[in-house]
Image (cartoon, rainbow, N blue to C red; front, side, top):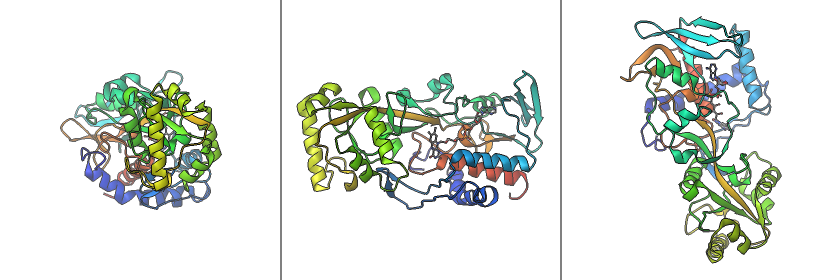
Length: 396
Ligand SMILES: Cc1cc2nc3c(=O)[nH]c(=O)nc-3n(C[C@H](O)[C@H](O)[C@H](O)COP(=O)(O)OP(=O)(O)OC[C@H]3O[C@@H](n4cnc5c(N)ncnc54)[C@H](O)[C@@H]3O)c2cc1C
């Protein structure tokens, strides 16, 4: 609620908080049943891992996320679900009274298929970040000045969002939020060692932020800089530093540092770095001296980052990484209530229409709270599961 400045639906959040653990247990006990290998839940609140503060809990399975999705799909098919692949939904069917009677899809042969949905129609078409017009209209221009766009679903073109609007649904107020990370590299990738809280300076060679922030806040601070980018600085001790900073985060330090170095400019001296950045060498030297002094003291007197992530930068060669933001997905959608019912402009449910995941709204404003780990996949699971239970009459 704080991250959204209370411009969101507290009742939706309360349901997520109250029921998400149960949804996760249902997934594990009823569907996965160990088929995806061991899960590694982590529930240490306020732990520092990967160089940033992570809150709440995360779960990962040995076999990876794709295996989890496949297990869910197989379970649904076993229970009689009919799946039409390559048949995008193109239009909702609306009755004269405004309620939704079903949906029409278009298959690979160009045929239209109408599905009548007696119980309800759930939109779960994901984000709209592959629809450039929608992005430009809804998202802050500065949030789109990114180096990397790393959603692997180019079919996330906002279809459900647009179909909902066409039948009178309301959407979250603009500007919309994108899930953003620091660590975007100019080559279009992300997730190198820059995701760690290494020293960062702007185009003036000046530090500007506690680098130990959660990824979205760090990314917002980077976007706020002139030209919406910054420079991560590591030195010859980069491997040891990555190992030290990442704590128990599930990343291989060598992979991270190699990727970082591959995308960096190697500089023999501070003067070289200043030349690449285009700043005054004396200013950059002063930034480094002050930072190293804080590392020696174990106290960051300027931005107060944690002592564990204060590591001296003093041994050439230096690695200079031109960092921008990485866009993962858009996370604002159609206004929904705690029952996942899609609301119209008057705040009333449109009978028969539901939304979950990134096509649903009401939870985020101004920033996506990365520090509540797993809330994106978590809300999709929780509200999808709850809606199924409600429509099946298992709960009110
Ligand atoms: C690199 C990366 C890392 C991430 N890490 C995390 C994380 O650690 N934790 C977390 O919680 N979240 C994470 N996320 C975000 C999370 O993966 C997404 O927000 C989440 O998967 C969204 O789920 P969804 O069901 O709303 O959409 P999607 O998973 O995108 O699914 C939507 C589906 O709908 C389909 N579709 C689109 N249009 C139509 C149509 N007209 N008809 C039929 N089908 C249609 C699409 O093809 C797609 O398969 C990450 C995202 C990225 C890109």
